[in-house]
Structures are given as structure tokens and as C-alpha cells.
Image 1 (cartoon, rainbow, N blue to C red):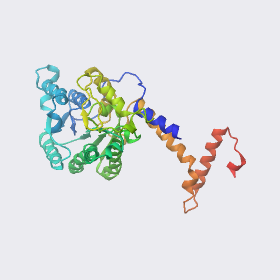
Image 2: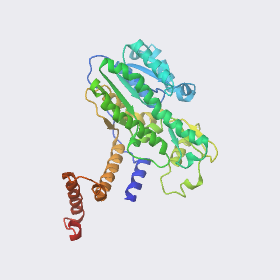
Image 3: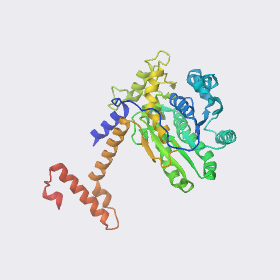
Image 4: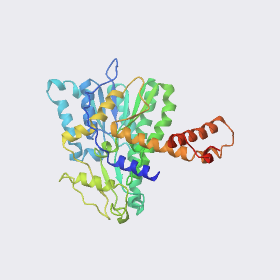
Length: 385
């Protein structure tokens, strides 16, 4: 079983690329333009999505985290998009009237409420809330426990991925409930299924957000509000948002630890660009915004952008959608491992069942059938007694 888990970790950390052509953007049928509200709009993914939405004729409320908008490299693509909207190009006509950018720190509930109120004032409603804020803290559990400063990185990770998105959802719910319609989309990653060595707090915050949304979906269903979790491969969010590295400990260096080193892989990727090169430290906290060539960013996010446009506002959207071949295969392997472990330890599960039930019998019969499959239908007598 440990071999299976190691294979999962390897798969989630560095998948083999599955190349195919992503179709042109598609949208579900709707009678009038929709208003999208993006909780963070400066990432390469968000900028490309906004461009597709405006091209389609929808309205966009683009929230801009203050600590990111002041970062010239981070905000460069969004500023280019704004200039496009203001240009005299025929194919951009009307764009400037259908986008509203709002400086908003999602970690502050009052700012989220003000942003939602402004969106309603300007466009009259919000049809699709897209929670797409992300940031990856890299460091093992022990590396993030060495000081108060590294412990604060844990809090920051939850503030960014979990609490900021919860704040936007809470701010939007009264409006959606009153309208008796709406679609809440949460962009996470397959980290909601599979843990990654070296990113435990990113995984924990992602699982927290997805668990919150699973419960939320049941609560808001009576108000005709849909909830969808969209899960691209982990690299999509990681390579398009801020990466924070905790100080390293020698015990977790790749030569001492067989677990795949996310720290090494991300460092190597960042060092491909002279503007983002980084040298890991055992003392300092380091951070970078990956800077990919525009063509590479296009290819990286294309599948996810297509999924968001195809699902956003759909009459019957999925509760979860895994984007891309690699992500789907990784999740399948994880679920296969979970199923096998359940069967391996079914006796331990049903032994504490205080009721004799058909389910207990079915569970034991399922294990017996699995044994027959493994042995070609021939079991030792002790296994069938």
C-alpha cells in the first residue's frame, strides 16, 4: 500500500503532459448577459478568462487585491487588458462599460461587503461568483513549525485560500438568495483530493474550503443557488500565483528524503527566468510570482478557462469538475487506493458495528469477491470460512 501512496505523490507532483487541442470557448445557453464577480483578477488565468467573458458579451466585476496591484509585474497583464478595453479597436467596442475593477482585500469582511454592494449598484446583480484567489506556501510541517514567523505562514495560507473566499461567499449570499438564483464557483485544485509532500498547509486550506462548499451546497439548494468546485491540476494555480518558501531544514533535502521535492521542482522552474531566480535559504522566507512567457501561460490555463466558461451559469452544473487528463487520472488512482484499503480492512470496520445488517454481509462478500478476482477464483479454505 505504501508503494501505491508513493506513486500517487509522484503523480500529483509531476505529471506527464497529455497534449491535445483545447476547443474554442463555449458558454451555456442563456437569455441575457451574465455578471461575473471574480475575487482575484490579476493572475494570468483570471486575465485570460476576463477577456473571454467580455468577448462573449458578459459583465465582469474584477477584484484587485491591494498588495498585488502595487506589484508591477503581477499587475502588468491586467493593466494591458484595461488598455485594451479603453482602446478604439472595433472588436473591443463596449468593453470598458462592461468591466468594473474594485480594489478589495478579501481577508477583510467589510471590504468584501463593500465590493459586492458596488457590483450590485453598477450592474444590478451578480450571477456567477468565481472564488479564484490562491497562493502556495511551500514547506514541510516541521519547517513551518520552527518559529513564530513560520507559524504565521500557516495562518496566512488559511487567510488567503480559505477565509478570504468564505468572506466573499458570505457577502454575496443574501443577494443571491433574494434573487433566488446564482452560481458559486470555487477554483481549487486536485489538492482537494491528493496531498503533496512539501505543501501540507496548501492542501489543508484547500480541503477546508472544499468541505465548506460541500456543506454550503446543501444549505443553498432550496434557493436555487448552485455550487461547483473546479479542480485543475495543482500546477495551474501554483504557477499562476504567488509562491512562498519557508526556510528549509536539511532533513527534508531531496538527497535525504525519498518524497518528491516540490521545493526543488518549483525552484528549478523559477530559475528558468532570470527575473524570478531564487536561491533557497535556511533562514529567510522567500516569495516569487512565477513569470511565464505569454504563450506558455496561454497553454497552461487554456483547459481551465474553457471549463469555467462552459460551466459558469449552467442550469445543471456539476458539484465537482476535474479539469484535464492528468488531474482526472491522479484522482482516479487516489480513489482506487482508498477503495483497496477499505476492502483490506473491512473486518476492522464492520467489527464495531453494533447492528447485524445486510450492509455488513455485503461488505464481507465484497472482500471475498475481491480476493477471488486476485486469485482467479481460487481461495484457501481459511479465507472462505
